[in-house]
Length: 76
Image (cartoon, rainbow, N blue to C red; front, side, top):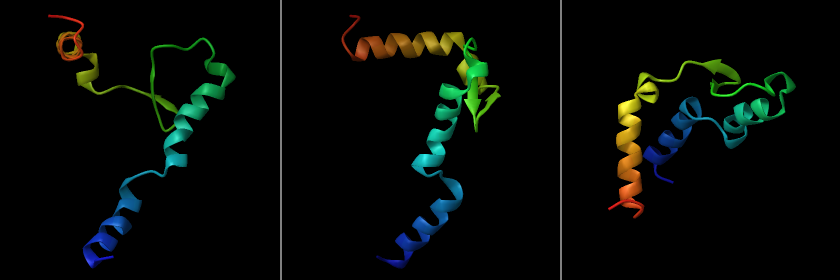
């Protein structure tokens, strides 16, 4: 493996989660009985977090929905 690829792989350990680490929030939310009636929240690292401002932009969501529907042939 070339040196630049080894360096890239080594550095990625500091910036990316393993699949097991990435699954932890989903698992925590799925099995935590105290969250049984909790809906509509965004979780990161097993705790509720505020989503990015873009996630709260209803107009952008509508544009994305319309574009997606058009791309898959649901709209003309």
